[in-house]
Amino acid sequence: MALTPQEIRCLSWEQLEATIERLAGCRPYEWFFRGQRNASWGLEPRIERECDLALLEGAERQMLGDFRSKAHLYTTHVPRSEDTAGWLAMMQHHGAPTRLLDWTYSAYVALFFAVEAEGDDADDAALWGIHIDALEGVGRRRAERILDVSAGAVLASPPHFDTLAFGPYFVPGSVIGLVVPILPQFQVSRLSSQQGCFLFNCNAFMRFEDSLVEMMTGVSLRWFVRIAFPRSLRAECLKRLMHFNIHPVTLFPDLDGLAGFVRLKNRLFPYPHKPGDLLA
Picture 1: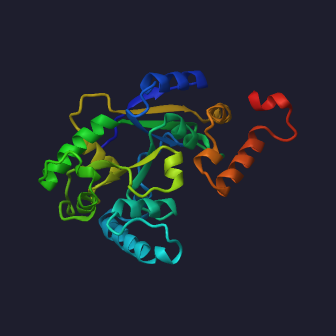
Picture 2 (picture 1 turned 90 degrees about the vertical axis):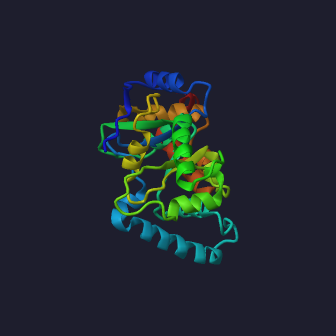
């Protein structure tokens, strides 16, 4: 199944900022955003790149069990045992592949992640946007039918999520898509700093993109956009985002973030810089 977002192309910072304002404006919780440094990349959780689709659910279940059984050896700050979403988020945070795909409520935070990396050969980077109410409405109704419950908060229940993620409802060959937003009860500081959330494909026997497209087929509301822009805007975007206080030390509130900020500042404003350079 092919992704068919509404395509928007911007050629300058001014066009990019105006597009974001038209889309989100002063309504920051209407859209999920994701930034990718290569506009040709699709929406693909890391585990889909590392595991054969037929073996994906079993591999994720095995990694989850291994991580959950050993995490206490390295930290006491862990999710509750029944909080599967929290455990998957913790795994993702520390580099293990999962079905979680990172998104944010902030278009400008997503923009930072689209431009932070140097050296990509791609001509364009991209911001993806998914309308929250459209996705949640379809997903909640479908999840309620699958679970045979009527509670509106079905996706907020850890046992319900665990059943959807690893239960008997999806089998090899199943073509029923279900992508749901996840904001774990257990959060790491970076997720909060980045206004982050996750989208999770419950049908492990479909790829994320196929599951999303199948689920949203027939939705007439504008729910899906991709904003492409030249990677040549990278330096300007990073400088502008500093005015918004969006940079490594605010998004990664630890020593790694501080080191990243110091490095980025020196790259954008090489020493010795003049007093006015930081405002250029």
